[in-house]
Length: 222
Image 1 (tube, rainbow, N blue to C red):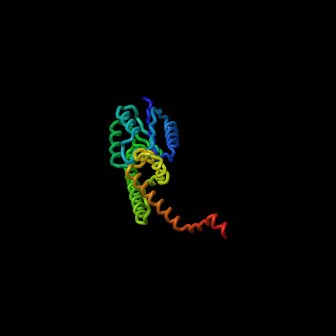
Image 2: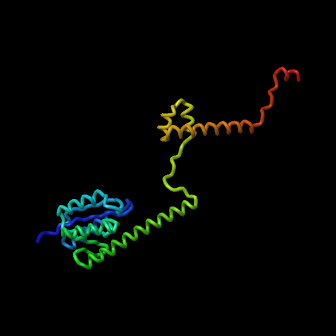
């Protein structure tokens, strides 16, 4: 009997999640089953669709008949769109490839395993859609509270830009140095110059007038 050549596929959505833990668990599973691990595919990315480099490389080899089994940590590691993943399972089944999941403790070699697989995939997609809807609701709530969303705007050092302009820097070079369009730089530098003059005038008016200095001739007569 030919040795069962197996591919392992692991995926995490963010760098904060542990990819290596999934790989180690899948390796131990294959060792317990006596399956030969012929290749491993691992990547970081969303499972929303199949447009993933490592996943596409796996599909290419599966379709070429390189493996008899595919091991994943969870069925939803393959993807979170239940329709796409179900179609993939149907294709792999026609090709004689068994898909085994550690987390669900199931494989697609039995009717029960295939039935449970469909239920698990539907629940996984429902979970993803619920998370997406909850995220939209939280973002809308933050907007309603007046919170600004998105990337923090780049800080612009107007005083520095004003000094550089006073030193003879051109608007073009100043825009490059400040990482801003020329129109934005002009607007902010000119606004700073106006504000600076206003502050200087206010300071001049607030300071008491200096007393007149008496001449030496006047002092000599007194």
